[in-house]
Image (cartoon, rainbow, N blue to C red; front, side, top):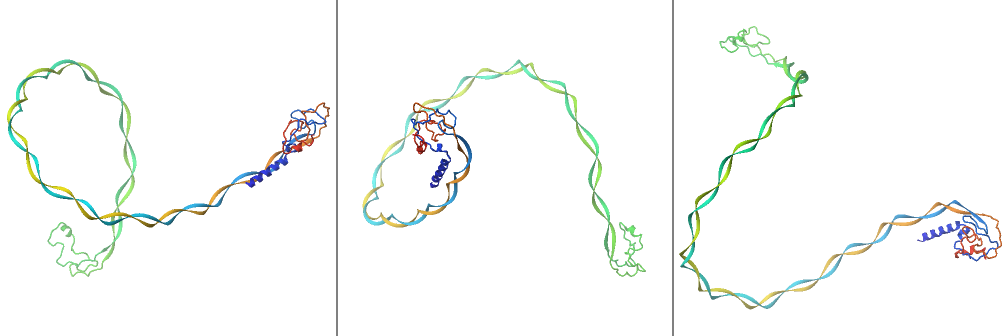
Length: 448
């Protein structure tokens, strides 16, 4: 706050020193009765200067001044805050505890006893009495009734009949057109590929005996093929001199290469004939028969129901009053005597337990909230006055000397005043009669 007051005072002093003398003497008091030795007419409006003294010209120049502005600043400030914390404290409280004591009291006890008593009962008694009763009887009576009998009559009626009407209608039919062509397709086929494999040949068996020949006397499916050979013995690697003599020595196994045919699946692309079918629209005229409804008058047989009155017999029930002797059950009062158990109250003195309450003071612990002062850092925003330089327009008054035009005046000038240099326009009486101010003595130094 002190900084603001100081800044405002410095700013006011700077403005006051930049003003000219006549402006600085604001609030000057001029007397309307002041006289000048040379009196002249007041200057016209818009003319700088006065008729009684020096004239001034005003010009404005740029001047750099220091101004002040208010800015806000946020900073961390340590403050004391009040926090509520939990605290345990001991306290005393009073409870009512039950206390059992023995006391003699007179109390009513319920007891039972047996006493005789008489009572009335209603016993049923059956007696014969003559009474009139309603008996249901039946009888046959004749009655008339109306029935609806069907009667066939012929009538002419309007009948809706559908008549076939044939007419030519242009319709669109679709024909299937076959277009032959060729397409490439991939097929799979099985081929036999010659492959060379290695096999091990078993050694020759023992030579057949001399008596063993192809023609052994037994026939078979392939016995004719066996006759082409001279011997049925397996040929040896090294034939003996006599095939039918002593068997040859057993040779070692032999490894041979044999060409066999293996089946393999091969894919290939072939060109086949394919027929493609397409639909072609064609307009043709066809005869279409439609059924058109037509109203035709025909004579038809109509069955109508006609009411007819007939007579018949029916059995009806009715009630008839008949006097009969019937058995009537009546209730007759009969007095009987018996005994019963009754309850009664008897005063008995007993010692009983009496429970009473007694105040007992106890001590407990409870949790209460207590205020604790703690220091915390909070963010607060402050305002501060910051000086900055700016450029303002300042009025500069330049004095222009003007020769006064003296004129005698018979009476004191009421509309003129001494040019003390305090007026804004510098003319005599430009402000008329003004009030005194802080610097009015400086303004009136040339007037008497």
